[in-house]
Image (cartoon, rainbow, N blue to C red; front, side, top):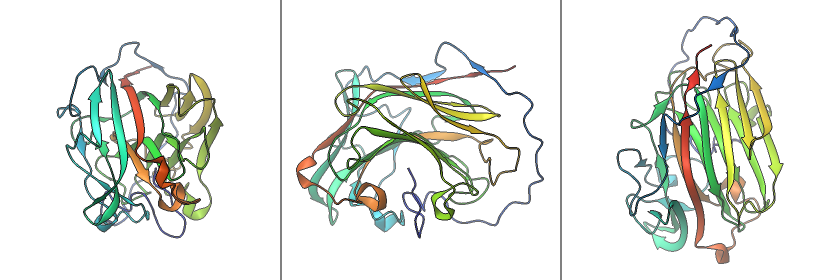
Length: 280
């Protein structure tokens, strides 16, 4: 979800800059294939009513004034049913055009940080994304402790991204110090699928010590192997957590402007699930 052009975007953010750690170069992983348990070790099936489950989810609250550097237009609210509500078996994140805290849009960004943090596993979400130019929904993961420094050094995993000006084209990506937009080395895959905004689809990432692979409706579209080149290329040996949000505009989502008529814009999430890695 973080996008970099001349400056870091979506999440300049989550952690302050810190000195680069002096970490010896690791050996490349020995295992090349992994399997996963068949029953989720953690999930939210959204089979309740009201606000998202507080035992699983917190909120990132605020706007560009928090230093998020992505030129987005929304204010992320907290515990506001208009922006994040569970009912009828789904979580609905809603971006609304309204005046709020000096901005013209509201939305929500749920995070599992500190409540559900993970190292390796199969991460799956079944979701329907909103249509409309200027919408930028995402289901993604960030490091919990930022052990290798600020973004992108400590990594990012994008399980699902969609921008409204590119209808039905979904993205799965990773970001690292060596591989990111700022230096033209982005590692990403895209797939145009039918009815991304009107039907539910399954988006999945398999994260192991040897690779990160991405799937849409069980179809493989993304593969990022661990090259054994240190944290600059593989910071994915630390715990990460979920994020679910709709951004409005921004350096990527707003490339073709924002259609006010697209709002309120809703992303519906049927479930999120984590399956443990089976040790070889």
